[in-house]
Structure formats: structure tokens, C-alpha cells
Image (cartoon, rainbow, N blue to C red):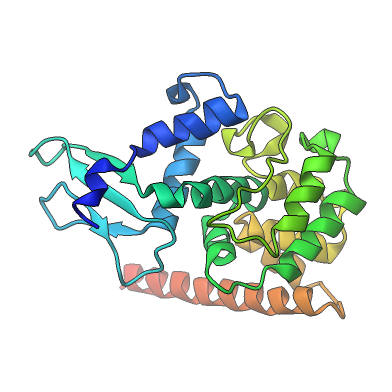
Amino acid sequence: MKSDSRHWPELSQVYDNLLCKKVGLAKPLSQHGKLLDALKTLANALCPSKKEPDEVERTPDKKKTIIIQLDWTPLGYGRDSRNRVRINPKHITLLWNAILLQGVFGEPKLVVEFLKPGANRHPLVNWARQLFLERQSLAGLGLLRKELVAFLDRLPVADLREEPLPNPFADTLPQMGLGHLHGNLLKALAAQTAALSLGDSMMAHYLSGDLRQAYLLACEVQTQSELLLQYRGLIIHEYEEAKDFDDLLDSLRKN
């Protein structure tokens, strides 16, 4: 595969094709700094990499889950040199779907879970369907109802390596960080906590990366929903584990 990778398309060109030509974002993409930062974080999660000290070239970290295949070629030999990043063309559809998932759910770790072979996507999709379609004004979130319904219909059953999901966003991507979208739809919803149930608000905060607020809400949640109970336990465990680690660091600093 290494020799073949020389003929793979550059990741920057693939982004240009997907986001400028397919979505309709204005060129150049370099003007969309927040979006590029979000995509970099996403790519790092989809293909974790490593490099040796004082080396330029990166290689996939095979100890971690690899969702898409990237290849790094150094552009120079100095320590500060950059890499030309290429993507396996067979994984471009997977990348497109990952970008849309990031726009909806935000956290790259959750996107990775969605894209793992054999992933059970139904519980979260059913929750998202209820949240987006039954309780919220889609126009206020910059969503297209027909495309969102199709997106949620196909998400649990589609082969995400082969089938490009429909784009549910009207004229922008949440990752651009514009106003009301807050970086992803769940952050936008989390900002409207008065419109959400306690359990939905807990989920929205957790999945958008706000563990502390999710924990505070989890301590109050009483529910019979298996999904909410599962996440309630997960949130409390993660928060207490993180707090124990912070307390350990504080004690070491004092010593």
C-alpha cells in the first residue's frame, strides 16, 4: 500500500472538492479557520498518528483504531518541515460522512464510535430523531427537514464506507462556529436548555464535550430510559475519574 499511496489525492484537495464544490463554501478554505481546526481534530481521531522525536514523517498509530487511511510525506528535512497528507481514495465517502457526523454530534470520539464496523447506531439516532424532529425548530438550527429525515433514516443502516449521507445543513457547516450553531448541533441545543428535558440536556452537554455540566445534570436525572441510564452512569464515572486525577495532580504539586 505504501507505493500506491504516492498516487492518492491530497487531503487538502479532497476537502476543497467536498466543501467548496459539494457544500458550496467560498474559496479558499483557508479563510474558514475554525472549520479547518475542527477538520484537523477530526482527521487526527479518524487516523491517529505518531512520529519519532526529531523526525518529520508521521505514521499511523496502529495501537489505536484507524478509521480512514492517511499517508504523510515530508516536504523537507528540517524539524519544522511539514507533511503532504494524502488520503486513500476508497475512504473519501467515509470522510464525507464523518464531517457530517461531526457537524451533528460534535465530539470526534463519538464520530469514531459511529464509524466502527458493527457499531450499533440505533439508540443515539433514535434519540437524535426525537430531539431534532419533534422538539426543535429546524429552521432556527440551519437545517433542511427533508435532508435531515433522510440523514437520520440512513445513518443506522447505511454502509458508511460506500454510501454518502445526505447533507442536512442548509447553507453552512456547524464546524465553522457561526453564531447560533456553536460548532455543532448539540452545542446549539445545549444552549437552549430551557427547551430540553433534563435527560436530553444532560446528553447534549456530554456529547458536545461539557463533562462538568453533564455531570451536574446527571446527578439530578431520574429516568426509565435505558439510553439515558447508560449515559448517566458513564458521565458520573468519567467525571469522578477525571476529578480523582485532578485531585492527584493537585496533591503532587503541593508536595
